[in-house]
Length: 532
Image (cartoon, rainbow, N blue to C red; front, side, top):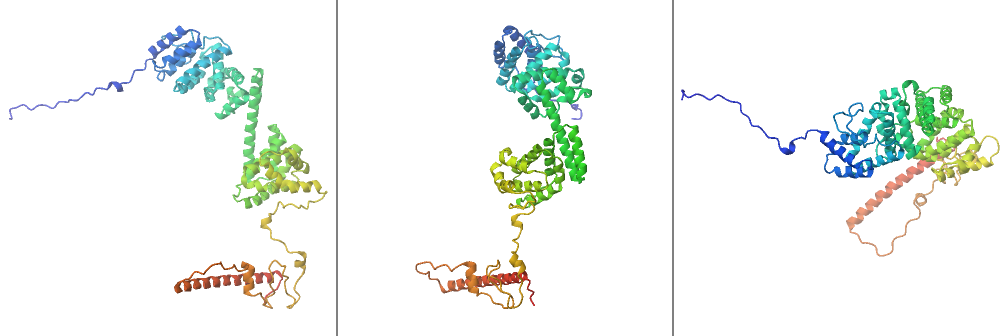
């Protein structure tokens, strides 16, 4: 055995063969491009035939894999290299968007081709948006005519809702903005978009993606002003867009001003400083007094954490508004400003349900503080009120308005609930007779039966009505026994019932006597009798 040669170990392995279904196909758009180009050359300028060809080819060709190549061919006639130039080693077609006529009707027909293709193959929607973003970044590589056609197509697609307005982020590219390409492209795009829809639709789409405040970024930093933007687009025939941008800038300035006012109020700055700062900002931003009083009201009501209980929030609101009545008065020098404040109060009380019943008290407070005038309140009541909570607020203000119409000049003595107190928090005050009449002796210390405390006398005489009479006064006459035979109970049950009844009666009797002693003490305290 020793003579036999030992076999040396060898490295052996098993080669696994990849399944055919797991093999990844190599990305090769050449054959795909040749098929599309050949089909487009056969259909020519007939866009209806182009749409039918693309619809049928989707079953044979891999649109999902070669979506970018497909859209490059339809827009530019071939595959685009980085920068926007056509690849030289690829076949091209002369029937594409960039070689079509530069008019709105032709661009609308091309938009219909893209729309039909995306509706037929829904998975192309995302790839189409990415293609538009890429084309916008390549604007410098296109001619002016090609840019105009692409801008018109993009405006039509935005108007029809085929793509999102978020694709316009590509226009804020620094190189495009510096060369002025973005602004020129935006003029053609927005003019087509507004032609398809209107400025309100455009504004809504921009607001939805958060681009309503970014239109100034179409210009370089040294030209990024409202005046330059307005002049540029007004000269291009887009005055509606320039007005929209000016309005958006004004809204942004108002938000910043409101935020600053809330910070000043939170710090507890003096109202004179707040008034001076607000008037300076109002002049700088060219804001009207009506707009300013709305901002101030929102700031005043936003700087407090309000109580959640309706009965407490009214007192809190009255106390808080008293503190800032000077600030509100400084910006209600005009009748329109007072009316704007009234409408703002109505809207706020309607939107915040805890303030619904506080509306009248707030108005009365501001009337006493000379913030609101009689004319503004009557104007609001008769014709200028909002529809929000109309009947509820008008009913609250009815008595106060009647008093305003009938009252003479002088300090108000309102027959309406006071703004400083609420009915459920005040106790009824004693009458003049009760305040002036005082007991003169031991024998002259009886209280009239009409008193709020009942028919009790002083502690000296100790004369009280019998307990049975008090029981009757408290619980009413005894209930009659039900008709019919009585139920017979076992002796044990009778004893248990009688014991329970005795305990219940004893407990009620103790409670009644305790109430009598308490009421007697209140009578003595009310009449100033000190027990010896």
